[in-house]
Image (cartoon, rainbow, N blue to C red; front, side, top):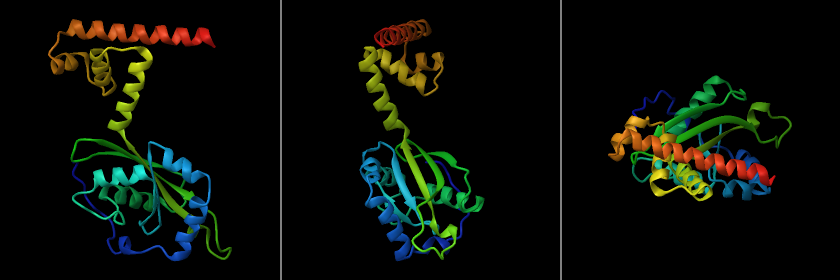
Length: 213
């Protein structure tokens, strides 16, 4: 896993969101049709308080958090990588429209993309300042899992052979032709031939789809 430097106020991270804050999120998320959508996404979604405490996670976010966590940690404690990006967002200013995107690698060498931004979940008390309604929303992508799902779809759609999909997978991971040849113990010309066949199949299906429209 990548090395990280923790430059946050640990006292702040122990703060617990109050009941009104939790109720705001519950009323906004749990009692809306968006809940079913959030649970069906292949990306992980988290809602985190201004005190950097998790309020909501869909199932995918829970699974990715476990991959990021070192040892058996309770899900009420955010993985370091997620905590750090939350504190970076807070330093930019509560409600700032800027998003932060970063990637990290788990102990199992899985690449996780983390995207954080502010979201306003609406006020429960008109006397509260606008900042009280701001929460951090985190999107988590298991890049390896998404890549495998995409490759499975492309192999079926374009009728790629196992060797072609193996080479296509490495291309999508930004391997050079020479690196692919060395990794698969095949010649550079063989790699080029497979790549040529891959693009020919993709073009044929794209033309076919266009004619059917």
